[in-house]
Image (cartoon, rainbow over all chains, first blue to last red; front, top):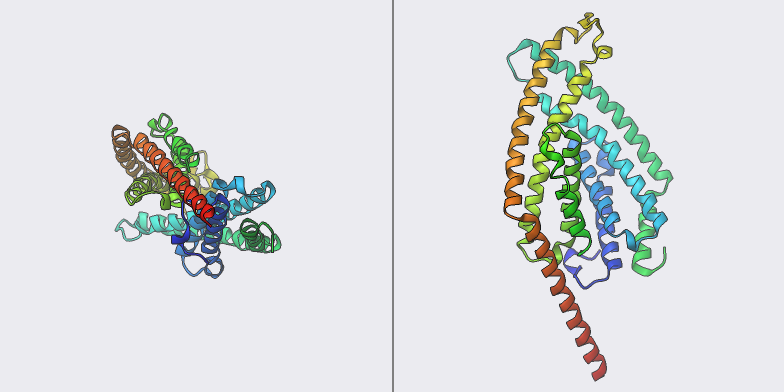
Length: 159
Length: 171
């Protein structure tokens, strides 16, 4: 893969599109396994941010990409961001609640425990939906669609 | 670059009037999304600008962080209010019917009040920061930076094309 220094203002828009779509997609997709294995909330957050960046590139370079392709890939990526968002929101909530966990007030402590459990339950629901959506992405040949798009932008034809 | 960045910049600054109302949580959230879009696009085109551009991106990130913290409070308030819903707590005629969290309603209310206070502080800090950006003509300066960079790059591309033509002619 070309490194960032190889992108210059004088390259064509198609070259820029290929370069950045590849970079942003790879960055996002590398979190797939850690997210599926629920290794850390940070992976969920990072994959969500990376998916947003990928969408931003698709939008910025949409004039270089076939309409149907950009529409499909944008829709799927947005859905992925949303699924990740449901899990991430609950992670933020538990993080905020944990700031209350150490307080002396017994009522507050018991309430925090209850809210914690409730958030955990919702997180599990969100994760189930997310895992199902990863299967949908496989069925839709999501990574292959990106590979083909990058090849089209680089060589004028798909692999 | 000359089209996308000014468009994203307009999108962000277009929220100015609507965010003057502190409770406009939806517009504040949309403004945060606009800030993200602008920042991501700026990062893509960073290679065209000088090193000072990184500082400008940092400013956009600060907007995003302020709005992110406000959004976290809004999310927490929404969650707590939802938890207070009669279906969740088994309220009857406004009184808890004794389910697990029902007796904790005053505590939830206290937590909501705390979140509202934190949000108010964050919002006020953000508005001060935002107004400073307006006073310092941040938008106009960035637009001028974009214009200058675009023109310089077009000139350079023309130079390169010219050199290429001279080279081809000399073969």
